[in-house]
Image (cartoon, rainbow, N blue to C red):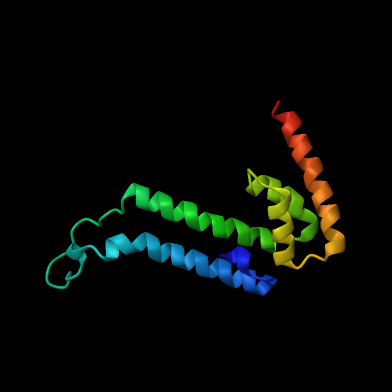
Length: 130
């Protein structure tokens, strides 16, 4: 839902990134906190700590990393954005990069230069992979 924002300032992106890191930690702890074996540990020593199901942990990390990557790109300086975008977003597109620049507040006049650089980097990466 970050893509639905109009524009995100650097301070806003930093705060959102911190919030997402905290939310991810809460989600990862939730299955162990809700385990009834750990509800009343005052009268008995706690058993071995429970482990969250692997699929749950993988899903939380996968979904939260999407938002983390997007916010890291928003925090990337505009001149370094094409390199970072190619590195972080494996299946990127012009439309998504343009939307990312809108979120960053990159002026329309600068967006075409960033897109040109992105196209060059993508072409170089394609030729290296052949």
